[in-house]
Amino acid sequence: MIYRMAADGLVLFHSLFIIFVLLGGLLLLKWRALVWLHVPAAMWGVAVEVFHLACPLTYWENLLRLQAGQQGYAGGYVEHYLLPVIYPAGLTAGIQLVLGSVVLLINGAVYWRLCRRWRRAGVQAIP
Image (cartoon, rainbow, N blue to C red; front, top):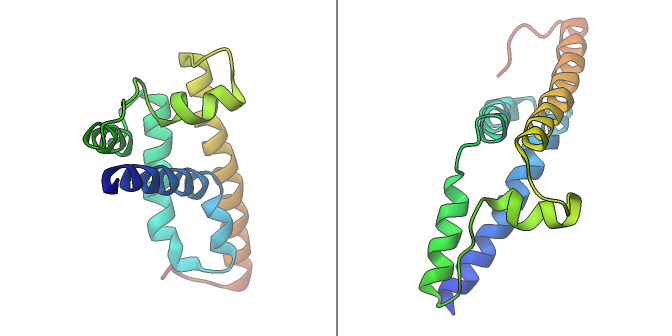
């Protein structure tokens, strides 16, 4: 029971991490210091998609599910949880490149806007 709950909690954390990677740059409008968390997270999210890296969170979730007597799953978090909803046809290398590009474009636009705002406000350095 505890392993199943831990695996479910890890899925929730994984979901929140993906949302942070995609939209966390918007939090910088309010809390500039988050840049030190968001930049590495966004870089990791892009790298996972573009270079088809295995995410350790998926590995840990599968391990916890196996400990709970459940079946793990092949592939990664995106393939297992998101693609059946967003892309029912399945994951391809092209789709992964698009997902990575979307992360880059959204965050690039946010950071561009933040840099302009900070420059106009005379902010010299990021905390």
